[in-house]
Length: 70
Image (cartoon, rainbow, N blue to C red; front, side, top):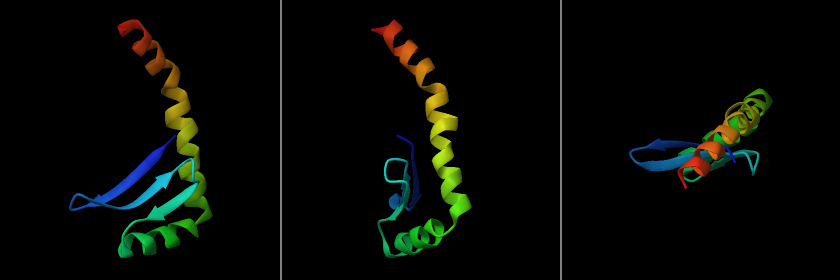
């Protein structure tokens, strides 16, 4: 799962989760940001692509490293 969180003053206000597939807001400001960002199809597709670019590309490397240390 790919998660990108946005914080201000140690308070999470918006999060993108690949399992949900959209931005979710946790504060009044975060809800407004999430609504705006969810209406931008190119931004959403870019965030969804980050799972393949970052997570799926590196998972085998991380998995092999964990197995050798146990």
